[in-house]
Every structure is written in C-alpha cells, then in structure tokens.
Image 1 (tube, protein in one colour):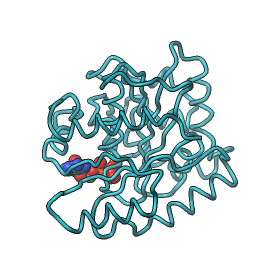
Image 2 (tube, helix red, strand yellow):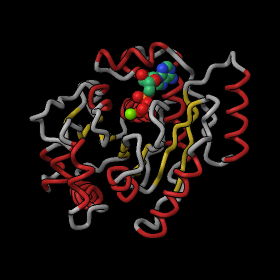
Image 3 (cartoon, rainbow, N blue to C red):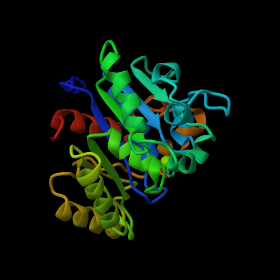
Image 4 (cartoon, rainbow, N blue to C red):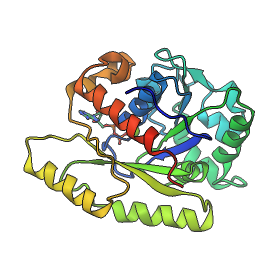
Length: 269
Ligand code: ADP
Ligand code: MG
C-alpha cells in the first residue's frame, strides 16, 4: 500500500485557510511525514510566525536560527536555512522564527514583494540533487503578504476544512483570493485538494458538513476523512508527527491514507 507513484516534477502545495485552528499545520506536517515515510523527498516550509510546523517537526527555530524570514527578507539561499527532520531522512523543513511576525510589514516596501519566496524556491529546486518530490507550505491564518507569497510559489492549494458548523464560512473569500492570484500573479495556481479534518463520526453535524463539502467540491475532496484524535493533538508536544509518534493509530493511518490519495491522484494541472 506504501508503494506510491513519484510525481514527474516537484509538486508545490500550499496549505491555506484564513481560519485558525482548522488543521492546516497538523495536516501539513503529517501529510509530509506520511509521504517521506514512503521514501518521497519532501520539504515543509513553515510560513507561520507561530512556528508550529517547525515545533511539530522537531527542528530548531530559536530566534537566532536562520529561517524562512532570512530567505524572504535578507535573500539568504534556502540551502543555508533548510534543516533535516529528525524523524525521516527524506523529510526537510525550512523553519519559521519569531522574526517572521515582522515580515508582513517589512515586505510592503520590498521590490517584487509577492514573488520573494517563489524566486528563492525555484532557484533551490532547480539545483537540488536528487530532486524533491513535494513541497508543502504551511500558511498563517490570514490572507496577507506571507500567504500571497505562498500562493505565488505554489501550483496547488490544499484547503483543510474542519467538520463543524461554520466550516464553509469564509471559504468563498478564500476562493476569491485564489482566483485573484491566478489572474494577476500566478496563472498556474488552482485548488487541487480539500481535506476534511477533525471528523467525529458520532455527530450528525459532522456528517452534514461532509455531505455539503462533497456536494460543492466533488473533484477536490479526498475520500479519506481525518478523525478527531487525541494522539494527533498530543504528538507535537513531543516534537513529533503522529506518523512517527504512534504510526498505527487511527490518526496516523488516516493521514497516511490521505497522503496516498494525493500521490495516486497525481498533479491535477
Ligand atoms: P491551524 O494550523 O489551522 O491553526 P492546527 O493544525 O494547529 O490548525 O490545529 C489546531 C488545534 O487542533 C491544534 O491544537 C491541533 O493539535 C488540534 N488538532 C488538529 N487536528 C486534530 C485532529 N484530527 N484531532 C484532534 N485534534 C486536532
Ligand atoms: Mg497553523
């Protein structure tokens, strides 16, 4: 089941939703770990000043650590910033530090402020040997310049949606923003994947949300649902993904299955 097809070229996937707490970071690190576990070469770019993805992957991100901030603001090449994850030899992380909180403002006056991550990433990926299979970009819960940088650097958007009452609220705003980026800054961008998170089989409401999202986005929604699980939420406090913290727990298995779906579907455009 773990024999997954490799993409023909690097798939760059931005994980975005301007709502906080919907499972962006959890999905980013666990999908990345699940793919790296099968031997795919994977990079996680932590683009949230909170640094939660860096924490969950167990990589150093103290204030004086070189980070994605230095890439975007100080033109430091990615090879000087990228770290190996302690969990999987094929998994890498470009960490975020507290400095990234200022980047949103600092970017405003920069030349090519929307393209800075894209340029650095393209340079790095072109020279990388062996080549990388996946790049996942974990976004902050806003639609500011950092998220715009992520949209411009990527081809695919993955939207995690929490199975709760307000799930679809704000989604049209997100889709409108993605369309604007596509029109003005990155014509190759599109929503490839929607992942339903924190699913609780016992509630009718969760089932209603699943049905609604499937009706609206029949092509994009993954079959796999990510269940609400304590193992998933406690893994980051050990600096681990659930995929290595408790590999056969239902939460880990569901992320592995979702990752397999993403790999088997291949790049959609
Ligand atoms: P975001 O990055 O969108 O803000 P997170 O991935 O940080 O969201 O998730 C928000 C909170 O919910 C975190 O405390 C996380 O551990 C928890 N969480 C995420 N997914 C699950 C899940 N499937 N089951 C239980 N808790 C979860
Ligand atoms: Mg997050």
